[in-house]
Image (cartoon, rainbow, N blue to C red):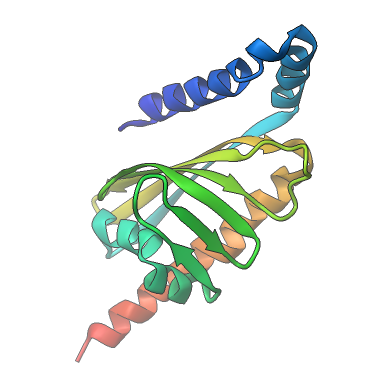
Length: 174
């Protein structure tokens, strides 16, 4: 799945979120449209050297590796429909898992308000000349949470993953 297909998937998910209100009357459909227009999409691309996309995929989907990489508790059911949680406040479900290249999840942080819909997270794992890259697209992020979540990916995932991968590489050398 490339970035264009990921964007199309996210568009379809947003349209689906609107359509769930369509049989509940025009006022609720209008409210849903307004709620979705008050959301943002986060896009990040992170390069990792000396590691394969398969390894990055497993670091995310394997609860033990994921927890070690982010230094926080993680529960992960790898199956489509399976639940996950991290940091004691992030929760969601797997919508699509295409090992070892694509993960799509519903995703909700403890800073989301009760009326906020879940966001949709798409992670694409790609090979590069130097190693691998992760492309992240997270749609339907409430405006009030965007800065915190953007910083959270950088601080609690990508910088920690870099250290974790480096440590794993150093421990593997005899």
